[in-house]
Amino acid sequence: MAATSLPGLTSATPEPRLTDSHGRVIHDLRVSITDRCNYKCVYCRTGEVGAQYPELAIDEYLRLIGLFVGLGITKVRLTGGEPLLRRGLVDLVKELRAWRTLWGEPLDLALTTNGHLLEGLAEPLKAAGLNRVTVSMDAVDAGTFERITRIPGSFAAVLKGVSAAKAAGLTPLKINCVLLRGFNDDQIEGFARFARKEDVVVRFIEFMPLEEDRLWTPEIVVPLKEIVERLGRVLPLVEIAPREASETARRYTFSDGVGEIGIIAPVTQAFCGACSRVRMTSDGKIRTCLFSQVEHDLYGRLRAGEDDEELRAYILRTIEGKEARHHIGEPGFLKPSRSMVHIGG
Image (tube, rainbow, N blue to C red; front, side, top):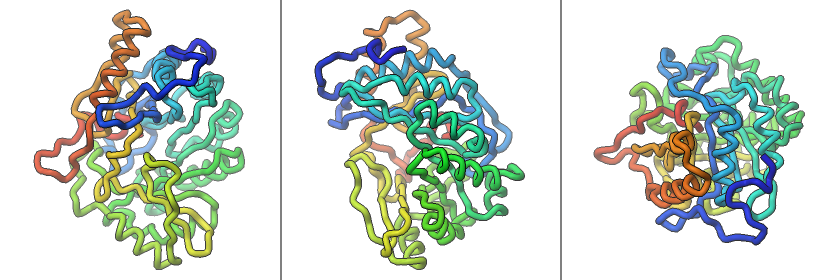
């Protein structure tokens, strides 16, 4: 699909079209291309539930992503499950690289992966046009890491993947660590040293109730305030100004300027008021929030024969109804109908 064929693309510089009823401009699309995963992380999966939802053909993902880009999306992040398991991934990236946003700039293309297969795919993905990757890595010692993933040899594979991504130029490379008290909260200081030594951005994420099982409680969350205090034991922190209002992570560096840390705190310091994201699941459903109780079947409408104009109108109506915020920890809070692995990170 050439850039000029994107639905809604015009030659004039437009105003953003994807705006919700709360005045937020939506410019970030996260697309799950599979809900399969080769890990069984204890905070995510029960270990017994595999893929639950169908995958679309690569051309179908392109068709749906094109509708969003034609309405003002400027950043596409490919997720899963584990997206490196998906056949056709490199070709998908290559096609997306040829596109332009409504403002004439190349799409910002990123990918989130557990890193297990990244060693062999980093170079091909970079050559295809991927800008950067984020690697989920929840410990900096092999024993803790493999107790979390429940996959022998996973730590060594991920370290090789991180090295390959850096060598390929998929930077700035971000490492995401979901912290759980009693599981891996002893890794905070080690990750600080890892960020400084490896020249990667380490981001700690407060644990959210998105697991397949019923593990989540408020007590298991390691809050931003505690993370900052623990990091300060390594070296004093200096906060860095956000790049944009919708940035999810609070950014820090150490007092000597070496290393960057991000902290994403959706539980204790929610950032819903500046949210710029929308998600599409591997089976083509729109989710306007991680914690949505309703899914919007875009792919079903495509299969029913709706044309691009009708599909664009449906996307606009769906985005307009985006939730104001999540309600984690409040009375009556309900977990979403899907767990994180089946939604897309």
